[in-house]
Length: 98
Image (cartoon, rainbow, N blue to C red; front, side, top):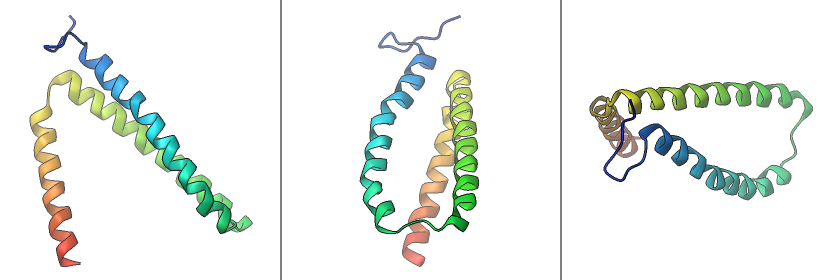
């Protein structure tokens, strides 16, 4: 069964397409950060720390994308909206208190 939105796109395709659209923005941000990386050379002892951080970021990103696909597939946007609202309020309050 194919779930279609009013514009005629499959939900799963639309979500994957939106993630693909984020690639140029991410690559652009990475290019802008290159000058900062070159300005401060990395010590050899820190390479392992950066590698572990990269692996964890990749795993967490993968899990988040898969979770978002499940949310879209199951139409559980209401719970996701509550989560976003709560985290947003906490971030705003935290910004003014810190």
